Structures are given as C-alpha cells and as structure tokens.
Image (cartoon, rainbow over all chains, first blue to last red; front, top):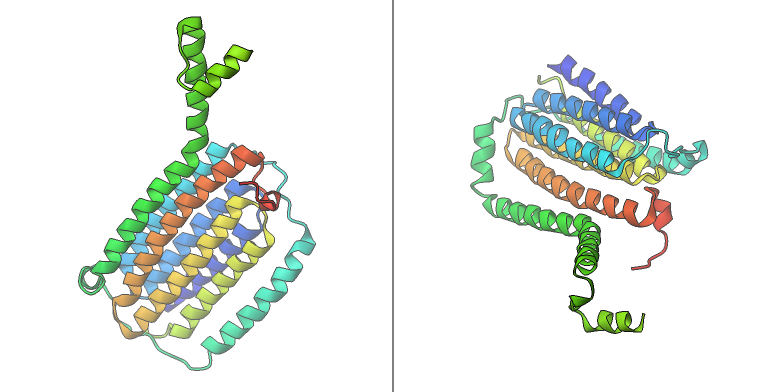
Length: 192
Length: 102
C-alpha cells in the first residue's frame, strides 16, 4: 500500500507537470485524465475507496469529457499558436516555489500517522445524509443554478442568430404582405 | 498502510496545488486556465480526504463530494463562457479580454 501511494504520487506530479507545459490542448487534457487516475489511486491507498471511484467517474469521466467536448465544439486547431515563452514561467515559478517551500515546511514539522483503517461508502453516506444533508441540498441548488447559467450563457448567441434567420426567412417568403411585429423595424423598412 | 503519513499526503496536495497555480499564472489559454483551476480544486480535495483519513472519519470524504459538485458547476459555467469568448473575440487567449465592453 505504501509503495503504491508513492508510485501514484510520482505519476500524479509528473502528469500534472505535463498538463501545464503541453501546448497541444488535447494532449494536456489527456495528461489531466492520467493525473486524476493517479490521484484516485492515492485516495484508495489513503483508505477512501468511495471517493476514489467518484474521482474516476465524475472527474475523469464526466468533467474531462465535458472539457474534450468543449475543445471539439470550439474547433481549436492542434497547431493554434498557444506557445508559452520561457520567460513567462520565471515570475510564477519563483512565487510558487516560495509558496511550496512554506507549505512543505509547515506540513512536515510534526509527523502524523494515518488512522490506518478504511472509511467505506456506508460511513460516508451516513455522514452525507445525516449532519451534512443541508450541504447536499445546497449542492443540488448550486448544480441547478450552474445548469441554467451555462445554458443561458452558451446558447444566447446561437438563439439570436436562429431567431434572426427565421425572421429573415418569414419576411422573404411572405413578401410585402407580412406585417413586421416591431414598429421600429417597420418604420426603417418604410424609409428604405 | 500505516507507513504513509498524513504529512506526505498533504505535501503531495501542496505540490499539485502549486503546479496548478503556476500553470494558472503562466498559461494564457482559457481552457488550460480552467484545467489548472480543476487541478487546484482536486488538490484541495486531496487535502480534505487525507485529513479525514488521519482520524478515520467520513467528514473529509463528504467535503470532497462538495468540492466535486462545486468543480462540476464551475467547469460547466467556465466552458460556456469559453464558448462565448471564442464566438465574440475569435480567440481563446485570456489577454485578449483586457477591456470591458459589456
């Protein structure tokens, strides 16, 4: 188990490094899937099999597929110019190394062993629908709001284009007999 | 299993968070920026699960589930914004959106 943890940790760190350094978008996202799988193995070795399964199903399955579909929908070419110049890493690199050094110093001063026993899906469900049931309700509202918000933001442009197209089509077919619904546009047409 | 200490799991979470943060600061592609936010959220969830495993309680895993729901909501809205961004600015470079035009 211990060896498995360290192997998965190394895989997670290396693949995450690949995510932030690849210029090909699809390659970066596939490396992110590998990183999430590695973190799922880490969860399993920490004695949390339920979240390990959820990490694979929800993160690597649902969220990453959403990313890949968005990339395909956006029609991003593999050779699109997203090159990152080397100097762009200097500032963030210094800041992040300082931050990481502080975190590692703070986290390794006192050694804490793990409890050593597994927390299964039953215990997690008891907690989730016991003291945390309000959080579940709030999460459902958040997801509903995100669903409506995402639909509204992404579909507005297409709806406007479709409506304009349909309006042009109706006007073209009916000719002069069609009375435009909006008086402002009628006045403009009369002028033209 | 007991040989894996809480510190090592938390250090792993810190390293993943730092990599995601560096990517967030350095990269300019909107999709990669969203992916870096996902890496950071995942690292925070890893810290929750590790802390829950330290005391053998389910609370850490419950918190990870909330982080997961929030990440799903965030990525849905974020990718919708990416689609609008691409339609209106014909690019995915976040530096192209440095003016507010409504």
